[in-house]
Image (cartoon, rainbow over all chains, first blue to last red; front, side, top):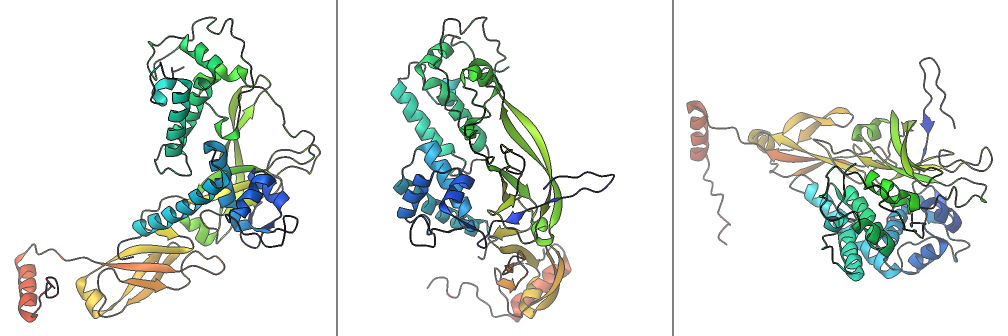
Length: 109
Length: 313
């Protein structure tokens, strides 16, 4: 896709929402997220992600897992957290997000 | 150029041991990591910590840094003494991770040259790397879809190993129904590939700007609606705002303060669409004149009402 600028019209890039209609293989998810295939495999064995399919060759990750994978990758890289630690941190972050949403919600929730 | 006190940033004395440097960095990195911290300046603090650690953890760079003297204050205008790095042979190749690629210009001037300029780690790969960026959009854009010009800062490492930020503007269609935390994939907008048509993709992580009225939780949206006591008690039809125009809704009789009313399908128009929650907030009219006071007094006499009937158990 290219940006074409004519006299007054601009063409806008059409993106695709990476939702659960999008699936990644292990290799694709590794390329997209920057996490290595080894890291991803370890995180799967910790239950951080639950891809469809029997083994690493057949694994299909939901597009919605991309955000968690990116967070996991940053935590592992920046804070040198091992896979069980990443699993725990992600669970706690989810819980904090849920609590924050409840606090922010106008009272009565 | 401003002086950066790396010891102060890491909360250390100049006599700190290498073990202290590491411990302090680890502790502060956990505290200010942007994925964990909600400090408004977490991202900047984390970058600053990474920069300070990059220098102090490396005995060679630390000695060179210490050589500039300890009279400088954080933020003070600074010129490095001539030949300050004379006689130092850096082993080179800082770890140059992506997250820390855009260091402060103080660091860049002093230590940037010591970083290895590796033009492309995966030069042998035909396909360009995928890139990521975070962008904030308005909630209204997710309701209606929108066309936006988005400006991104791209760190570029030049042949000397220095990092500069280049600005890049993209015209992007924001699809209707997108939610915070989702990624928008723009094909071929990542790093260029070895041959034409093999560029990587660009992933935009979407977030919403804070909205003065609406709160978002996944695909659901909520807001607080002020109502008069008689509207809540007797019921009312009220025109309420949504992020996409107004709708008319019914407040059922006998509603209490804090009641959540659901407008089904009026949340973010994803598939399936979310809901819009209206939370009633009963506002009392002020008794600031005689007739208003008389009305409250008439209420007092009309009700045999004890708000604390169940209060004392």
